[in-house]
Length: 148
Image 1 (cartoon, helix red, strand yellow):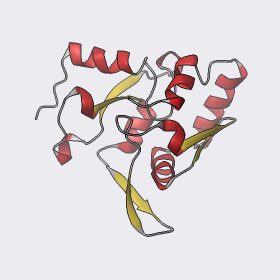
Image 2 (cartoon, rainbow, N blue to C red):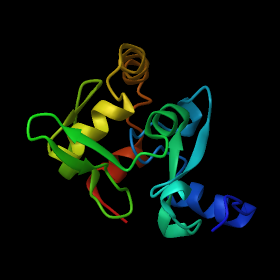
Image 3 (cartoon, rainbow, N blue to C red):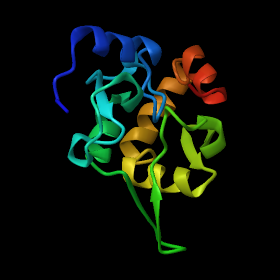
């Protein structure tokens, strides 16, 4: 287990994601901070540094997620894992209504809440991008309908 990610592996992850955050679907071109690689299961939890455990994430999603694997659903008081872009279909857990990313499942709810998908700044950013036709991108629309 190593935190080092080779250039080739980094490139594979970025290209597989079409340079789109695999969580909130923000394209790298529209992000002031660019994208980062995320260990879906973090190193802290012994997640491997390999293609199937890496996702491309915008800075905000990656920072909010941190090393967490999930959160508590406060209605059921149960631990619920986060959305996993390698195992889950985006459209089964989320719906895009205007600029808001609406959760459809418990997995969606904890992911939306902890990742801060609908914070005022992020809603404003997506609203502006929608107004100029940059969100969701064609690649993001495709990502909404399929899984890896």
